[in-house]
Amino acid sequence: MTPTIPGTVAVIGAGTIGASWAAYYLSRGFRVAASDPAEGAEDRLRAHVDAFWPTLAALGAEAVGGDAGAPHDSLAFAPSIAEAARGADFVQENGPERLELKRAILAEIEEGAGAEVLIASSSSGLLVSEAQQGMRHPERLVLGHPFNPPHLIPLVEVLGGAQTALESVDRALAFYTGIGKKPIRINREVPGHVANRLQDALWREMFHLVSTGVASVADIDTAIAYGPGLRWALLGPFLTMHAGGGDGGITHFLEHLGPAMREWAADLGEYPETDDYIATMAAGVAAELEGRDWGAVLAERDRLLLGLLAAKAQAPQIP
Ligand SMILES: NC(=O)c1ccc[n+]([C@@H]2O[C@H](COP(=O)([O-])OP(=O)(O)OC[C@H]3O[C@@H](n4cnc5c(N)ncnc54)[C@H](O)[C@@H]3O)[C@@H](O)[C@H]2O)c1
Image (cartoon, rainbow, N blue to C red):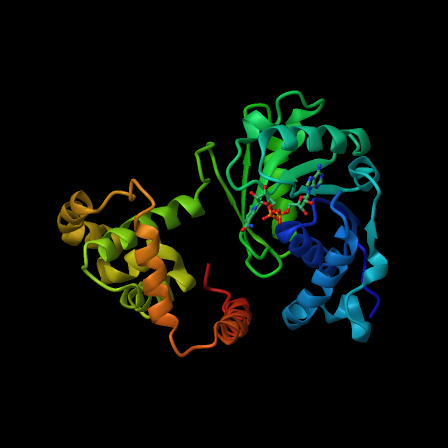
C-alpha cells in the first residue's frame, strides 16, 4: 500500500523530545524537516529514528516504512531553523528550555514559516504568553507539551497564551487528535501545566511518607503499580472515583467518603525544603532494584505499555 503523505512537519531541536517527535511524525506518514545546530545532530537523529522504529512498527507504522524500516527519504535535515520551517504545514518546537533561546528560535521559525502555520512548543514549563512576546504572528503559537517519549505516550497538553487565537488552540487539538494523539485543552496557564502538577501532588506525598518512615520506596511503588495506578491507566482518577461509588457514582462516593478525605488532605506532607531527601529516595530505589536488570525492566515496561495501548485501542467504550 502506498501511504498518503499528509504534509510536512518542521521539528526544531532534535534532542530527546525532538527525535521522538520526528520518529512519530514519520510513522504517521508526514515528511519531517528537522533542524538542530549541535555537532552530529543529524546522525544522532537518524539513529534515534531507527532505534524507535520497531516500537512504532508495533504500533502500526509498517505501512509507512515497509520492510526497509524507517523512511529516511522523508526525513530532511535543514542547515537552519528558517530553512526547516519553510514550506512546513506544522512546526513542533523542541529547543532548550530557556526563555531567551525559545524567543530566538521562534523568531527564526517565523522567518521561514508561512504566517498561517501553527507553531507548537514542547516546553515543559515556560509560559506561552512570555515566549510569544515579540513574535510577528503570536496568535499561532500554542503549547503542544508531550510526555516522554512522544512517539509512545499519547498525551499532549495544549493551551494558548495571552496573544494566541482561540482558533489556533482548536486547530492544534484537531491536528493532534487526527494523528492519533490524546490532546487535552488547558484553559489557563499554570506552572507545570496539568499532568505534571498532578504527578507533583503524588510525588510530594510519597517523599513525605518515605521521609517519615510510614512506608518504603518499594512498597509505595507497589501501592500505586498494583493498586490505583492500574485503574488510573484505564479510566483516570475521576471515573475511577465514579466507579467506586457504586450505583450512586461519584456523588455518593464524595458524600460518603469526602469528609474523611478532607481530613486526610489536611494531614498531607509538604514538598521537602532542602535536598536532604534525595539520598533516602535513591537508597530506596537501589534497594527496590536489587537483583534486577534495569535495562530488562525498562524493556519489559515498554513491551507491556505497547500491549496496553493496543488493548485500549480495541476497547471503544474506554474514554
Ligand atoms: N525531556 C523531557 O522529558 C521533556 C518532556 C516534555 C517536554 N520537554 C521539553 O522539550 C524541549 C526539549 O527538551 P529535551 O529534553 O529534548 O532537551 P535536549 O537537551 O535533549 O534537546 C534540546 C535540543 O535543542 C538543540 N538546540 C540547541 N540550540 C538550538 C537552537 N538554537 N535551535 C534549535 N535547536 C537547538 C540542542 O542541540 C538539543 O539537541 C524543552 O522545552 C523541554 O522542556 C522535555
